[in-house]
Length: 199
Image (cartoon, rainbow, N blue to C red):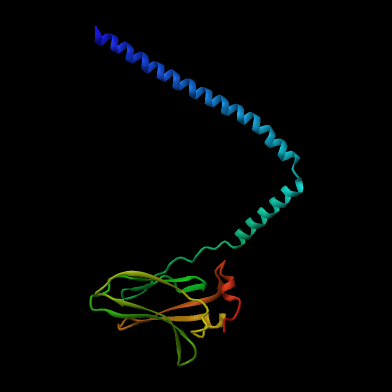
């Protein structure tokens, strides 16, 4: 008999709690709906009373931003993966400001040397832009990218010094060089990096 009474009391408490929660939820939802109904007309009224010239200026600025974004739309060329042994360069042509991505995979334990990015300055001379060491005993695969920019130190003073054919040499190996070209187009957003001479 005691079990029967305790079940009734427990059931009554559970039902009471459920009713209390439902009442609270309904009250909160009603108050929120009333607040929305009160605020909505004020918002519409403020919008109608605002200076239409100001709204027009904002709309014009948004249109200008969208037009500029559409004009600057850029899709990178597909990756080609030019290969020489375990070394790969992702493209044969780059815009000024594009990063040159190099992938190294499957170096032999005995392979050690440098990856050198060279720009030919005349018939007999090259400028070394950057070197990247590699050692197959320490790491057999890794990725690297370089950003070819104007450099007073390297004598890459103007756009003319960057444009044209570049060579990637794998010092310490017998692997063939990889050649790529930087063409006379600038990556959108990088225009300021290539407008003035740095020397």
